[in-house]
Image (cartoon, rainbow over all chains, first blue to last red; front, side):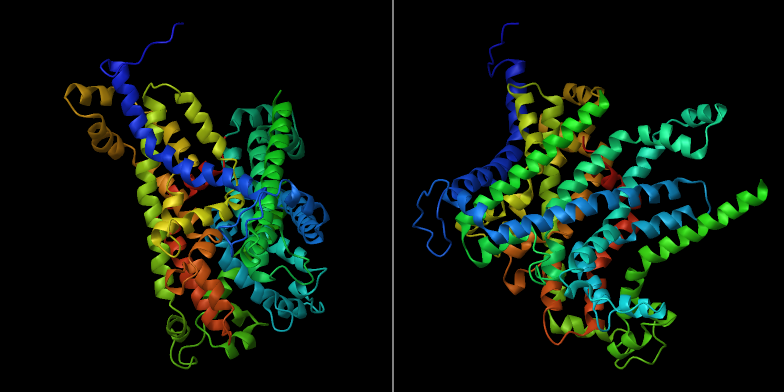
Length: 299
Length: 284
């Protein structure tokens, strides 16, 4: 089909102009505050930009990226982030699914239970982090006092390099599971009732129904939840920043936290940008791999 | 058969109740402790008292002592106000800018329309955590550090909001607009006087998505608003917690204060709140 020529006088021309006028504010803002910073991040990553001398920026090629390979702190932050992600994702998804299955049953007080499981979501990550820092306090914290009631010896939680990250993981799952429970619940309610009725007629057990009706019916929702939790986990920052300042012994320092420190505390924007670029690429790769997996499962 | 069913139910309710306690008790503890003095908080910790409010008259200075002290020690009022200005600024301008963009992408024919749509959707993949440094440099050069402008303007345009609006407007019946057009209404007039009032649900949903995101925002307010008078409540809380001497009761009061706005929105706009969340949870 031949392309129509756009003239302002025609109806199409006027519509095009109006369309652009409606779109333009958003487009300009996205360009200035998202796409342009993205591009500058790439540019800075190739320079020795240091905040204290902003007028003396030199291109240094890939030196910053080479530095990443020998940076033990970066490696440690990456390991911590991966550890957090690999544990949080399956635990949180299973708990969220379990909760959704429970509150989806036709039981009394189910609205109360749903609200209870959801309640941590209403608190911000900062509020939850501060609250749990007190609960985890090894000497006089609530959790150790409660464990004491059951005769369990006090744990060091956030003050021990072995336990700190696991403590953050437990808290993160507690805070976030209710959110995914709601999404699973929406997914469960979208599974057609007649599939369960058909399974009943075939004499399927509860477990068989779960395996052959519920799980396939939740495939798209689960994949979506899987992708969002993984990426959110990879961006871990608030919990270690507030609860442990990355310690003890760097055991909870995350990737984004390391980038923040290098960029803001050490003012080394060039190197921090190089790490931010690597971080972005990792997020892209996670997304692409997961999208591919989703496509294959759908086919 | 019946007996097995009953046992089954008892088992289920026990598990659900146990889980409910597990999920609820930290918030309950926070709320209850915000009315106690520190001695009471520690003394009550091993008993059921930990989850019960203090007896009247046992708190020196009155029931709201911690709240009064917390507001006195740091400028909590200012932090809350800043958070409200920051989030409502983003919501107000965000609703206008993003709904217009969504409408354009759903309704008007113009060159490169699908190209712009894909660009906007592609930007969803950019993690905000990866651009905060160059964004800070940009906002610094614009002279917007420690201003509401610096907090608000970079986050007005929101690709996800544009996408939600577009999906909504695609299903919006065209006949109403045609009728208004015949009556001689301008395109902008049609949008603001006819479309917007008829699209309250999507506006409410997007407003709540924006509220949840930005009320809880941490990294950007942390870097761009470092002056005490510009701190948001989330940053103020962290600052308060690190300020010796730490008084637990007062911190609990401050945490409760920071939670109230979300709680209010959740209680009064529950339907839209959950809608906003599930929308966030099914964006593809």
